Length: 267
Image (cartoon, rainbow, N blue to C red):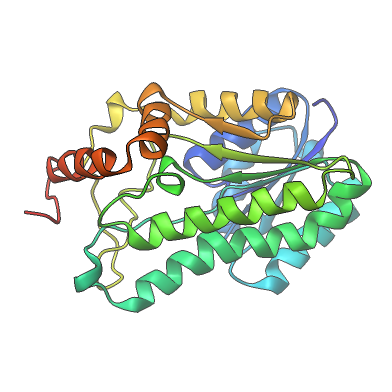
């Protein structure tokens, strides 16, 4: 991946930041995208030397921001080899209690953000026979209760990317659906509650989860080997398998698992 041009959205924290650092360490030219330019610029020296990193403020829900992200990348580095659609938000609330603006927010960021960036970058990715990556979740294969908007958006991203893979089967474009299991990050602290306010805390023991750095290393290797699908963690792979083979049993197991969470919405 040396000298490849890699765009990472949601690059200011968690899996996105770890991914930017891994690609930077491997010699790629990295474009970091997120809403807060000041934060990106503070983090950029940990990603790559100044001449090999570009920080671009980008709200992925805005088509014009995504087009500007791609244009600035091409002007600076001459093209695009990899787009990692990582920007995303989560939620935690029962649908019956939910303000629908929360679902709109989830779809706007997680699904439409992926669509907007992919649309803008696609001509350049095709030009270089590059890789289009979508970071989804096990919740994009097997639904999680109290995360209706999250699961729905991740299912939608998976369907979108799987379709693009078929459309460009003869064009040399690699399309990767990358599904981490539970990974230590800030996503649960920032998850939206029923009224759209941030949760502010995580119900999980973050220290026992896969680290963002380990996740990013797996993503890097998947891009390097042009994989089409990756599902992380033993629990994640078992969940996907059980959902396919034993859907009703998986529903019950998932219900019981979520019911044991701290502050579970079922309680």
